Each structure stands twice: as structure tokens, then as C-alpha cells.
Length: 125
Image 1 (cartoon, rainbow, N blue to C red):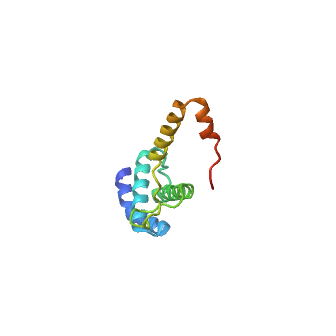
Image 2: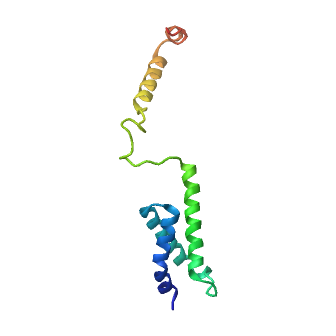
Image 3: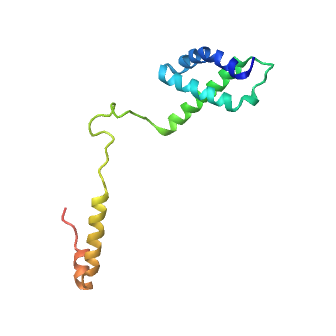
């Protein structure tokens, strides 16, 4: 039996294992897809004397662990539907930067004596 045919026969077992690891059907399907892709790309590393399923389980588990590590580094990820109104929104800075550059340009056009008065005047708090 060739590698691709044998791999196709292992898909139900991979899905069951992935679902046990991930606890989510959609994530499990993504894991299986990644596992099959990696298995096809790295098929030359598979030892034909050993069971294919054991090798595939190791590949799938490694992909899962790597995704967990990546997830810890990237922080919490939410879908747009999970965001509370205003959460995750940042105030645009373009207008502030434009205003600051316009003020700096206007100050540069003033004579030195007038610029010193404006720049050195303490702010009211």
C-alpha cells in the first residue's frame, strides 16, 4: 500500500486524537489538516518499519504543542463578535500628530523673542 492511501485511512483516527487534544471540532480539523500537510511534505522521514499512526500522532501532537506555545506569546485573541463595544479600539493619532507639526511650524515662523515667551510660559493646571 502506498503512503497516501495509508495516510487517508488514518484520517478518522487523527480527527479523534485531535479532538481529544483540542476539545474543539474546528480547531481539531485545522490540526488534522496541518498534520496531513506536514506528513505529505515530510513523508521521507517516516520509517516504514514502524506504525504510521504512531508517527502521525507524534506529528499532530507536536503541531498542537507548538500552537499552544505560540498562543501564549500572542496573548488573548478574540473574534470581532466577542469584542465588547469600545474594547480593543484605539484612538487615531494622525490628527494629533498633524496638529503638533502645524504648531511646530507656526512656532518656527515666529521671531525668537515671541517664540521664547510662548515656549517658556508655564502651563496652567
